[in-house]
Amino acid sequence: MSFESLGLMPELLRAVREQGYETPTPIQAQAIPIVLEGRDLMGRAQTGTGKTAGFTLPMLQRLAHHASTSTSPARHPIRALILTPTRELAMQVEESVRTYGRHIPLRSTTIFGGVNINPQTKALRAGVEILVATPGRLLDHQQQGNLNFSQLEVVVLDEADRMLDMGFIRDIRKIIGLLPAQRQTLLFSATFTDEIKQLASAFLKNPALVEVTPRNSAAELVHQVVHPVDRERKRALLAHLIQSRGLEQVLVFTRTKHGANRLSEQLDKDGISSMAIHGNKSQPQRIKALADFKKGAVRVLVATDIAARGLDIDQLPHVVNYELPQVPEDYIHRIGRTGRAGSEGEALSLVCVDEQRLLKDIEKLLRKDLPKQVVTGYAPDPSIPAEPIENGRRSSRPAGGRPAGRPGGRASAPRPRRSGGRAE
Image 1 (cartoon, rainbow, N blue to C red):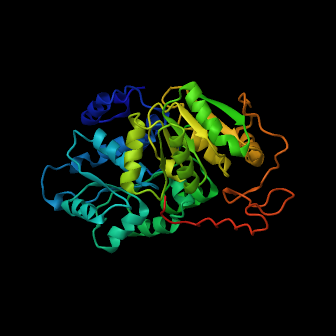
Image 2 (tube, one colour):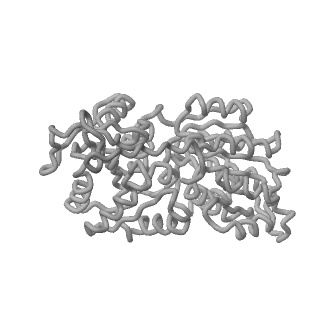
Image 3 (cartoon, rainbow, N blue to C red):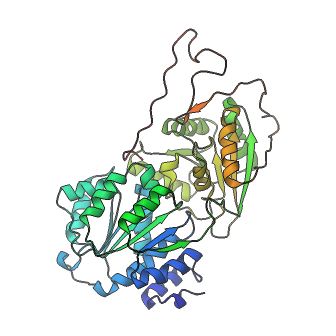
């Protein structure tokens, strides 16, 4: 199958060719004709499957007859809204809109938090047909009277599962309530949980269903290995693996923002250039970290799950689970960032005794045991007891002992997780 056979207009085919693409991915081949028909769509696709082009290309074609070179804002009302969970994903989606729409005079912009709102307000008042936004900042602009959705035709909920994980459900319901009832709605999610299905039934009308990968399947081209190691030697093992194997462009996952910062600082001390990316970083810091990582100026990018969601890095060779995620499905999302577009990838997991239950949950989800490989010189000490992991952190009470910390001191209780918000 070719892009020409999908019924795309010459201007879009030209842009696709300029990007070097010849054959659509499965999600594109299935989704593009459905979106061109004007039907609602519910699509399940992992990161790296080409889903962004799967909705961007047909959306641009549906709006092309509105294209205008006029400078009047009135000629450029908002006709499409794309909601994303993170700033990085918003930027990447809008970049795709610009890339594929370069030969069609439609305007686009992106709005997200963490940066000055005034330039965004100026762009909106100048007029844009396609708006890419994170939920929180979108509602900020709505409250300031900067948005008019009366002529909106298409809304896309991208990575809907992550938006729910981040606590955006109320914001999403508010936003959908602002939109015209007569519209085309497209929803994309890596998983179809009961919550996602409920969301779809509330917002979509008789949607077509597109699924391109088996439920919770791991990338076939990803070589997965577990390295057992003591919790206190993880950092040393990570540095050893990177240096001894000459690994470049390594995406490392931690559970917490504090852990990401600490690990990045330690790697720098080991002579391994590293930067951390998470919700407490300013937007300019996050943009610079990703740009430096992509061009090879930074060898290691340490990230939390939410901050890393939406990172679009072609041919990323190595993913390291410095700490296993509490939710097994997040392991799928993590390792799905390598082994993309036909390229082989590697996913290494540094697993200590505390994480054996998390590892078993992941293997149960994968329906297979992951290969275990002890690195010479880093064999775990069998006498070290496990510490239960609670809310993403190890319990302060070692098995069979008093609370850890200063002798005789009280252990600090783990901070509760935020139920939602916009930090990441």
